[in-house]
Length: 348
Image (cartoon, rainbow, N blue to C red; front, side, top):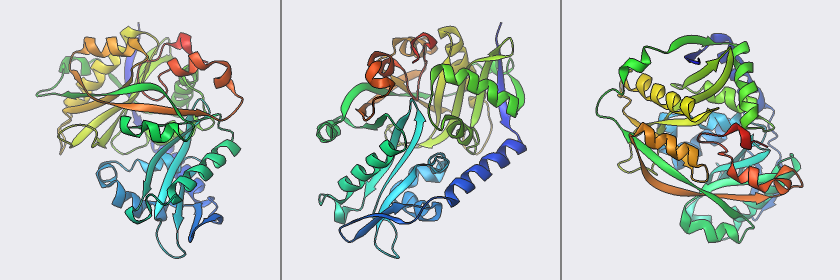
């Protein structure tokens, strides 16, 4: 029989992650990579990133300093800026799974839109990702932008649904009483990685997960059996404009399990633990993204019974290397990637 364990970040791991982020931020090269018009393209440091991100994505950063997960990666942030001025366009990239460079936080100030500067920044970052060993580039976009990215060589591989649960009272509080609490130690992290590697790979996967586990107010819930990890969820603060009546949510991501039974138990326990926490903002609103090509995750979420679909995002992909994705496109496209229940039998 498996058991559920709520992991709390140890002081040792917390210091390790802080040091990792600081070191990788400090070694970023800030030399100009290329001149695009009157702007210099270069990799950005954390102080340079922070102000524009707060300006461009205030709802996200106000609740959760998510950009630390990007800064923990060697790729990081790239931007266009005039000498001595803040970035006028930026794009973040990191390698999270399947040797895929994931892009996000793409933005350009209104005065340079439509002039090709941001597109050229994108193209240069693509070349950087390829040079760093990525076999694939991927990101989410709204349906209306699909033709734009298809013209850049991307294809839509799947649709992810945005699912929302709004609870009026604590969710099955008796389940929380069955969950043990332990400190997240180095041995526990290695057990998580041993399980995670069955579902994912990635050049920097461990660093990404460590930064995710150390995010303020995050909760890591493990399912274990015979001292081995057989599933886990991570829950984070989020303010997301993609969901209606935008306000504070708890975002469940990742969500992985060996079986549908464990997957459902993880979601039930996550909602139970979260919804009984008594803090400044009651945790009664939850969101979870699902890969529509994985019916198992949809079926499990339907059995939980409290989530409703709120919208859809397209996942765009471009293959840029001669790696496993050209050889095994079915396995690649059918995996859940970064969200949702994953059948271990379909891994690469």
